[in-house]
Image 1 (cartoon, rainbow, N blue to C red):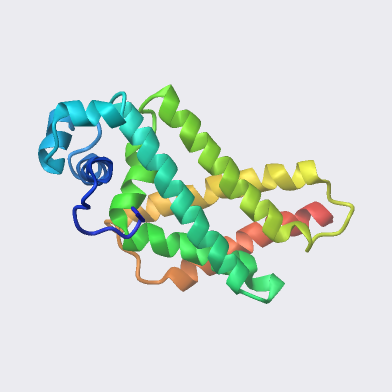
Image 2 (image 1 turned 90 degrees about the vertical axis):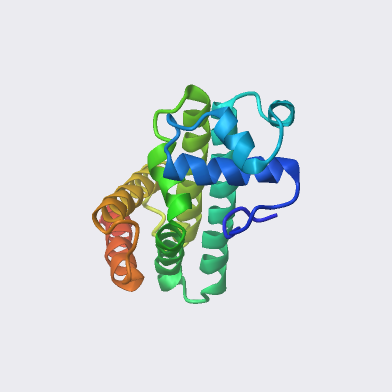
Length: 202
């Protein structure tokens, strides 16, 4: 089951809980959502909830892990489908922005509601950011001269993930969760990403 584009309550108990958690965490907020709220929306028992999740924080960590893997899969596919090396980063960034602004529940959970929830959630967040940075690194790796070290590329990749997420958060707040011109935003961010890597080679 793909949580990323799911619009209706699924049938399996665990998936129902994930769906209810995503809906409630992004509407009522993580702090204002109780396990009781989640099981009532999912139409499962508390016993069923605790068969699948240790706590509300565990549910958040699982949601983040599932959604980040699905988003990374979408971004990776966008990169791989583009045959022109110079445009791969642009299409990857474009797909990421598009997902964030067309599925505001996912963006809200990934970039706003999950921040500072618990050490467990932070560990999952950091892991997801590292995987995203690794994807950026692999995308540009063959485009730079040998004088640029892998360590330098890793640092810039990590910085770019932070910058991209910050821009998405700012636009998410300013635009109320919508942004019609993905192309413009993706182009600007792509210039920043490529510019940062080009500067390493100078």
